[in-house]
Length: 217
Image 1 (cartoon, rainbow, N blue to C red):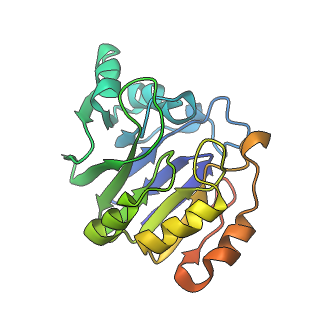
Image 2: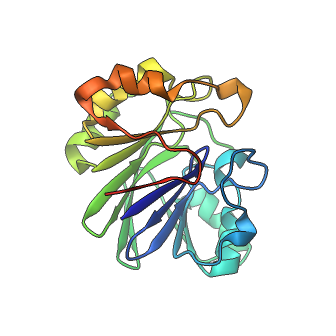
């Protein structure tokens, strides 16, 4: 399974299906791909209704026929535009084309519904995308219950966890591999991922990607 960081919190997961998470590409100064370049997707997951996460999700679904998976209120908006959508809520699981999406808690605001995190289960692997969140002890439960193979954690501070909180999150979740996201898109969330990697130490393998780079598990 290949995980590609597209910039900000946008992720592409390629396995038996192609899954995009939070595809904020238009207006994203560090995006590695343009939305019009995406011609294949099976599932598009949106963690919460903020412009830098909803991004191009609706247009990608319309172009590719992908199913949108998000919290109920966002799914309702998608359905109004003729998009095939699976609405859900925190604590729930939906299965689309053999891919399971588990919705978990995130502490953050949202314009519609609640902010969430997700665990994507595909091809025997579990990927935890924390969305926008502050540090929460619920991460310990997420780690114990789902045992994610890889975690995608925000480190940019201001609107999400900063480096100290994200380091504690690594300790709670106990994923073997962690990829930092949601940083250096804009000056206001500028930070140093190398510092994060150093502070995590041997608790996990911190993989620092440039937008467009991939990691395979």
